[in-house]
Length: 289
Length: 306
Picture 1 (cartoon, each protein chain N blue to C red):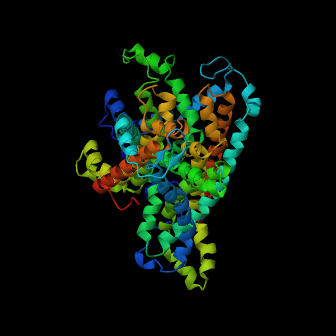
Picture 2: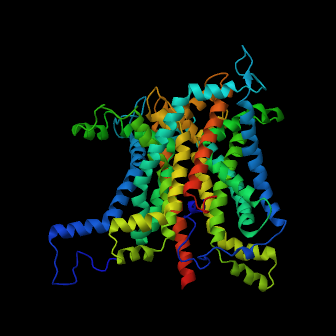
Picture 3: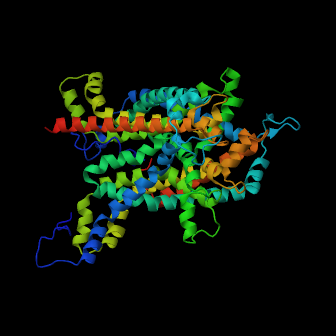
C-alpha cells in the first residue's frame, strides 16, 4: 500500500523535514498504535489478576501487602475453590459436547437443505442470542421451580447443564454455518460423481472440511459455559461453579487462590489456541505446497 | 449473524469458496428435519417453554400471608408496578448500556481496522489477544477494575493530579459502571467489525485514494459503509448483554441507583414473594430489547443478520 516509506526516501530530490517525517510516520501507523493501546487495555485487568495472585494478603485481597508464593503452591487451599472449578470443567465439557453435536446438525440442515419452516428455525436460533441472560435465567428458574420440580428435577448440576447447552447451541449453529457456507459445494458433488454414498461423502469429504469450524464452535461454547455466571446463578441451587464461587467470595474479598486458578485457565486456554493456530497454518501450508 | 464467526476462517485453505453456494445446490429431503429435530426440541423445552412459564408467572398473584406461594391469575398489576416503580432502573440500564456501546464502538473500530488492513502476519496473534482475556473469569476481571479504579489507585491519582476529577473518585459511581460494561463487552464489538472489514476488498479503499479523496473522506464514504453489517452486529452484541447486566453495577457501582438487572436478580433470589413483579420486569426488558433490535435491524439491517 505504502509505495514510499518515510524512513527510506527513494528520491534524493525530496527530503521532508524531521517534523514532517514524524507526522507521516504517525499517520501511517496511527491505526496500529491505537490497536496496541486497546490490546494493552484489554490485558490490564488480567495483569492485575496475575499480580494479586502473589499478594500476601490478610482477610481481603484488595490492597497490595507483600509478595508470596504461598497461593501458587496450594491453589486448593481455600474451601470450595477447586471443587467449584471441577464442577465448572464438568459442566463445560458436557455442555460443549452436546451443544456442538446438536448445533452442527442444525447448521448442516440450515445450509444444505430447503424445507418448510426454515425462516422460523432461523428466528428460533437467533432469538436466544438477542435475549439478555438475566431474562433467560429468570425464565429457566420459573420453569425449573414451578414445573420441572414436579417431575423430580431439582436445581443443581443437571439444570446447569441443560441451561448451558441451550444458550451455547445458537452460537455453535452460527459458527459452523459460516464455515459450511464458505465451502465449495462442487467438492461434495465430485465425491458423489465418484459413486460415494451420502454417508461416505459426509464423513470422508464434508466433515474433515468443516472440522475447523466445529472445533472453533466447541471452543466458543466451552468458554461461554465456563465463564457464565448470570444464568448459572439462577439455576444452580446449592451447586457451586467457579464464577459463582468468585462472585460470592467478592463480597468479602476474593482469595488469591481464585486468582491463581483464573490466571492458570487463561494460560492454558492461550496455549491451546496458539497450538490450534499453529496446527491449522501448518496444514494450510502443506496443502499449498 | 454469520459475521460472528471469523475464528474458523483459515487463510489459504483450499476448500474455502469465496461465494456461498447457489440455492439450486440445496436439497429437499426429510433428512433436514431429522437433523434439526434434537436442537429444535432442546430450544423448545429450555427456551420457549421457560419463556411461556415466565409470562404466566408475570401474571400470577401472591397468596396473602404466604410469601413464596403464588396462584394462577391475570394480574396485570405486576406490569403496572414494574413500569411505574422501576422506570428509573430501566432508564439507567438503557442509558448506561447505550453509552458503553458507543464507547466500545469508538475503542473497537481502530483495533478491528488495524487487524484487517495493517496487521499482516500479526493478524492471528492479535485475534488471539482479543479473545484471550475472556478466559480469565469475567468476574475476576471486573473485580480487578474495582482495584484499578479505586480511590488509592493510579488512575484516580493521575486524574486528580491534573484536576480532571471533580468528584474525587470513580469507583462506586455510574462512570465506573459504564467503564466496566465497555470493557467486558468490547470483544463482541471488535470481532464482527473485524469480520466485515476483512471481507472488504482493500482495492476498493485504495480506489478512494486514487480518486483524490483524503483519508477521512475515504473512511467515511467507503470503509465505514462496507463495515456496517459488522457494526450492526457488534452494537447489538454489546448493547443487549450490557442492558441486562447486573454484575458490573454490583461490583463497581453505587449503592443506590441500580439497573434493572439488579432489581430482577434481587426480586427473584433475595426477596421472598418477588417472583411475579420480577417476571413482569424480565418480560418488559425482553420486549423492549426485541423491539429495539427489530427497529434497528429494519433501519440499518442487511440479510447477514439472522
